[in-house]
Length: 66
Image 1: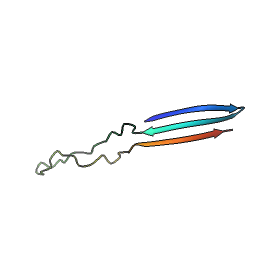
Image 2: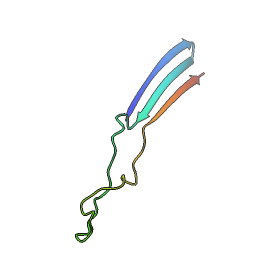
Image 3: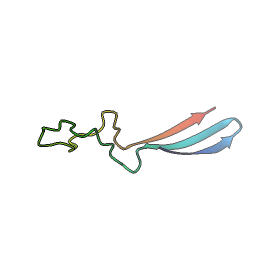
Image 4: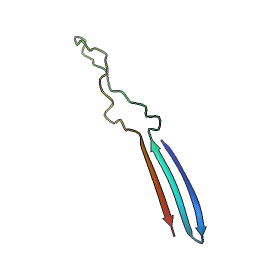
């Protein structure tokens, strides 16, 4: 996960904040468990990703405080 933000003072108590937040920046897959049936022809092969796998996400935001 990566988060970068910068605040810009606008005078007095006013402020503008710019943010960039990213998850799974390297887009690395999380593989599921291999087939565990010894009699199966696909023994020890992986066919799916881990259920909780999250794709790469990037969020941009501006925040104005007064």
